[in-house]
Length: 450
Image 1: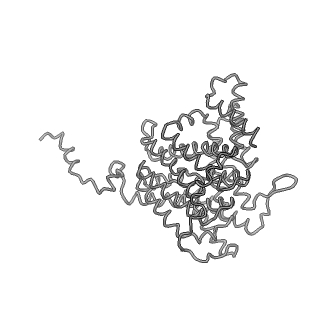
Image 2: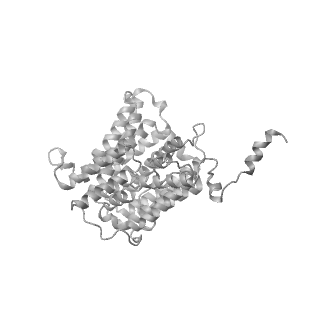
Image 3: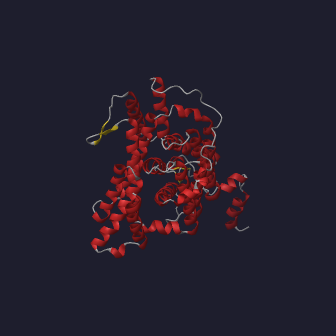
């Protein structure tokens, strides 16, 4: 027998594993059940804080906290399964930080839009997002926007989220003369929040994958010990009703025709562009999935988060994104979608722990918001600060979000200043036609809608 054929014959005789291993391609990605399970649990632990933080943020908008808790967990679980079975990537999905803040503090509280109508806007944005993804238009629009403005948007949202965390912690307070001032740092609840921030920061520095989650656990425990937080009446209970939020987006769809909701839909689309795509590429690089700088099954992966956004708005939460926290699971060995199935299972189990919402006070969630802000602000390093035609629009975008308490305002001001500065420089030909379209849209936004 030809010796050159022997290795192939040996390979064909090797057991191919069970159907699950075959479906997810364990052999091709050099992984196994143990690694995938550990990776999936690690991803869940790293992003599980969203169950409580998202609930706290959307509760500020007047939504039922039990229903939001369930909507968050169900959306995350089903979305992870879609990512696993369709795209076969170890990427966790859940309602996105930034979009939830935009939903609660800009749309509902700032603009006075009822949360039901805001959810309807999220649903429309999710449907448009899905169509744009499946047709390839999503990538064309994304490529038309300068990288500097993309990074500025992410960083600005990070500062906005951190600002909310500082307010909730009592570290920053309102002032009649200077608008803002240092809060009463000796207040017990503020001390608890600062303790939580320090604990979480230390774990982040030490490389603890689930630092934010463990930071919340330690802070809540410290609050209970000191009497600042009451003991929960129970730990495990039946899953709360989803009725207060389920389907509200559909029944309030006619309200989306109101002019102010146009801004909601557009901004959600815009933020989703950056969050979802950027996260996928970042995790793909870390896991070694990119081939010639191209992500295999990109349409399926991008489609999964688009479907998740539609699903989330129907269940009763703000739009969904892929989570950069999935990198923790990848670092722990996750390489296939089976890890995302495990993550989904963890989210479903946690739905029975809703009584813990009683101990997750603002002092507990504030450190998480500040740390998330730090992570998002890392985008500042990618901005060309020495190039004023990019630096100025980027700075305007970033600073306007926390100072006007609006993500939409920051994006609008940045996208108006960029083409104007380019035109003044004489580089108008470098501006993509889509950016001119956005310039007009945002000018109209400030004239008629703000």
